[in-house]
Length: 381
Image 1 (spheres, rainbow, N blue to C red):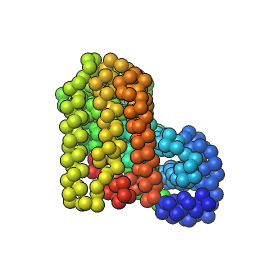
Image 2: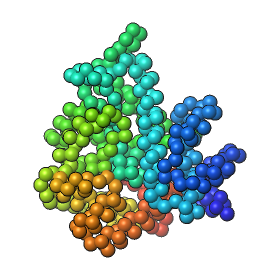
Image 3: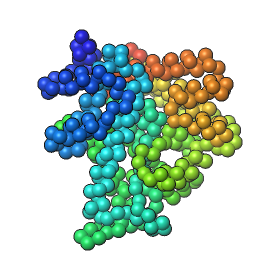
Image 4: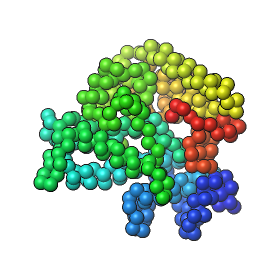
C-alpha cells in the first residue's frame, strides 16, 4: 500500500521507480530508517561502484534520497525536520564532494592558488544562503550560493602548468561547480543553482575576494542584503578564512545598537512583494492565495522572525540563528513574543512548508503554488 500511495501521489516517483527493476526495493530499504542524517558517502560509493562518473553518481544518489523522503513522508514517518535536514545535508555533501574533485583537477592544471600577502594556499568558501544556509532546504528547491576566496594572488604553477590569477582560478572553479550540480544529464540534475545574491548580483563577478566583499558591503550593501546575509553559512573553506569573513559580515548584518530602522526596510520589501503578487493575481486570477508569497504565507512568517533578529541580533548573539523555526522559539524564550503566538506561527509555518515540499515532490519541480494546488512560478526565489 505505501508504494502504491507514493506512486499515485508523485508522478516523478512513479516514473523514477518504474525506470529500473531494482529501484522499488532500494527505496523500500532506504525508507525503513530515518533519513535525517544518512551516510551519504556510503550511498555515493554504491553508485560509483557501477563505474559511472561522479556527476551521474551524485544525481542517482539525489534521486534515491528524494524517492525515500517522498515515501517516508506519505507513510507519515518523516516530519518536516527530517525532510529539510536530509535535503540540506545532501546539498552540503554534494558541494563539498564536487568541489574537492574539481579543485584537485584544476590544481593539477594550474597549480595551487597562493595569497599574495599571506603566502598561504587558498581555498574557495562556498556560502550557502537562504533555506540551505538555515538548514531548512525544501524538496526540489534551488540552492542559493555565493563564492568567496581569501585574497588575490596567483597560482604556484610548476612545469607544464599554466599560471592563473587567483580570481580567474576561482571563477573557473565556480563555473565548474555550478555545472557539476545543475547541468541536466542522463540522470537529471542534483540541484539548480542561483547565484543572484552575490555582491552586485548577476552583474557582479562570480567569485569575490574577502576584500571585495568587505568593500561592497560597506559602500553598496543594501538593507535587503542584510536580510539575505543572516542565513549565510560557509559549507567549505579554511576555518581562519571563514572567521575572517564572519568578522566582515557580522557588523553589516547585526548593528551594535537596537536597530529599529530596519523595520522600514523590511516593510518596503514586503510592500514590493505584495504589489507584485497582486499584479500577478490581476493578470492571472488563478494565481491567488500564493502559499509562499501571499498574505499569511511562508515569507511573511520568515520576515517576522528576521525583523527581530536584525533589530536585536547585535546585542543578543543567540538571535543570530539561521533557522526560522529556531528563531521563533528563541523569541518566545526571551519573551519578545507571546509563547501562544509563536506556537501558532510554528504550526502554520510547518503546515505551509509541508504543503510546499509535498507539492514539489509531485513533479520534482519547485513551484510557487496556490492553496487550491494551481501551479505558479515564483519570480522571487
